[in-house]
Amino acid sequence: MLVNIHQAKTQLSKLVVQVNTDQEEIIIGKAGTPVAKLIAYIPPTQAKPGVLKGKIKLDPDFDAEDATINQLFYANDQK
Image: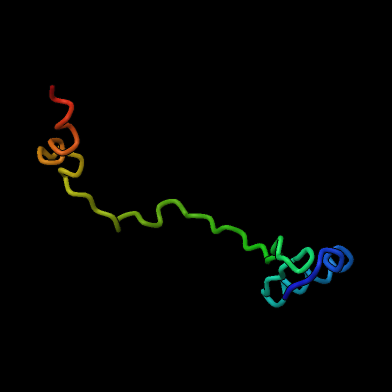
């Protein structure tokens, strides 16, 4: 839905209710050109510590250096 700035100012409360109820975006325009978007606020979800405990496994040599990769990265450093 596109509304102009004047309409948005005079009907802001109604538009906010509409956005929250219908989950519809409202585009606010100036002279027919979109300049802003009014959308419903969705609070971020909180990660729960430990939710992945035991689900991620790393090899014992996970952080071991690899000679081939070192050669690719540091070949120009050996002068």
